[in-house]
Image 1 (cartoon, rainbow, N blue to C red):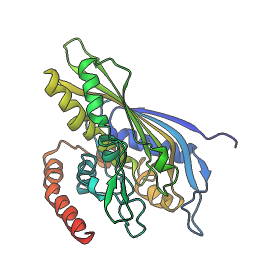
Image 2: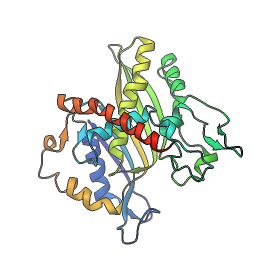
Image 3: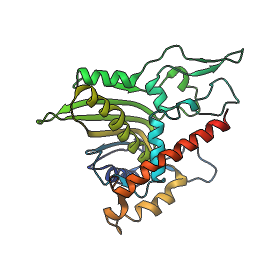
Length: 296
């Protein structure tokens, strides 16, 4: 094989799209080595993936096969809102083992990083751009603009980082229906997306980010009802690591033909799921505080 497969999926809901994308990858992807393989690991399965979720807020949203819990979803959404931005390390301090970046930090404060100077003081990068505010402002002034974009990649840092950002860009445009409702359409591009271990949480997280951060603020400033239109998810490398293939087969691929969609999914808007999701916030805050105290 000389070409990386390109797989396209379009489904109504998040849970359906997640399942279809993973199945398409499993059945039609190519095998690759990765730089993270351990001796004896099977080859990963990889492709370039294009997923369209037509109605991001429609149930069923939650797929039971994603490797995590409702509390993990809440924690990731809080992370995308900036609750962990202070976990970023001083990049030239070898003793600092915190993260090299956060997505929210790159979107909200693009151009900023932390360094440790010779006298021990902490300094930040040379400029700061609030891309979230820029996108909202552009869409409020001109909903049909083609310029409402945010990026994460900082070549001065990321070409040297061991684990540079997987998320590369977010692009937005608004369509207005006959009743005057705004529909926020979004394209999300990842250079690398762990299909089994991370992609569901990534997609769920950015649906909530778009709803709670972007759409809600546009609605506040314009007085318009703003809902989420389709989200197009583009991954240059959409992959299942070899070490995860057996688990994915056991938890998902072997069950599709023996269980109904209702048996494989949850409705996010069901009362008991909403209660679990909302009540997880205090535990997440406790974990963040505990981490902060241990990394002073």
